[in-house]
Image 1 (cartoon, rainbow, N blue to C red):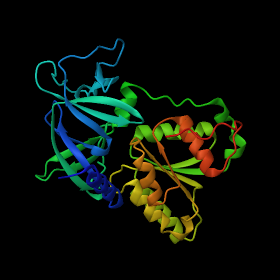
Image 2: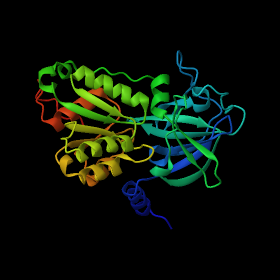
Image 3: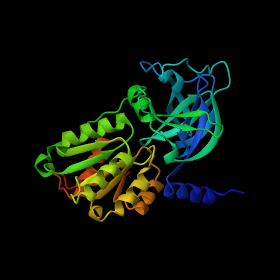
Image 4: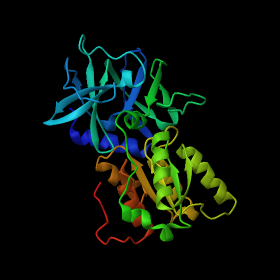
Amino acid sequence: MTTSLDEALKRTSLSRSNQMEMLTFRLSDGQLYGINVFKIIEILESPRRFDRMPHSHPAVKGAVDFRGKPIVVIDLSEALGMEPVPFDQQLAYLIICEYSRQLNAFVIAMPETLLTRGWDEIHKPDGVQAKSLVAVGYSDSGETILLLDIEGILSEIIGYGIEMRDELTSQGVQTQGRRIMLIDDSRTALTMMQQTLTKLGFEHESHTSAVQALNAIKQLENQGEPPSCDLIVCDIEMPGMDGFTFTRTVRELSSYNNTKIILHSSMSNPTNRLKAEEAGADDFVAKFDPTTLAEHLFKALGIATNDDDLFITPT
């Protein structure tokens, strides 16, 4: 019999081995899609109707009560420009997920199976213009599995702001000359972080994969050059190499022993902080609140603020 401890140990071992476990599912187009099980809270049969939300995006079907709280229901098919899943006429399912400390319910046609894959088996598609697609994998039978940019979908449908506390944007003198490396496969997340750092007065460079960033870092080290940044903010879930593996690899490079690393993820489960520390990261922060990110950046770099009570918002 599998216990909760067994499951916790299994998932911890995945974070140590550059692997991820995904749930595969179908949408209205019959295509196979995948989502990291760490983000899934529960899978339920979909009700035939929802409480409507006026003036919302067409893909928002309404709200559903989940453990005593209303959460937004989004039809992923319709969000991707396809025919909606006819949940009011046939059996459909809800995947309850947590992204950026917020619960959302996604309507799907049918869940399929659980698969474990190495991140090196998950590839970033080249030349694909679909802005909602971040990676491609394959099932045991060789069928293509599409991994979606859920953060981008949520940003488009619900919206994320990048406003932050006024005192944080007045640190320009202290942030001048401080350079931060950003690593994230989501174009939406990367853009929001870039805008945040620009507002704060930080210089920054960006990479869309950990492999790309690691190659740039190793090239500098092989040339005997000092690190190009004072701090690295790295996503955890990425094709090719996850953030935990990236952090462990960087910590093996002598010139990056003192470079601060913050792991940044929409998976805000408290165990991620422990896994981040275990991998050698200095901090973990959940996506995406610009004020919280700014606070963690200032703390990691030892930058004082104008507000003694500012640090630090729990995540």
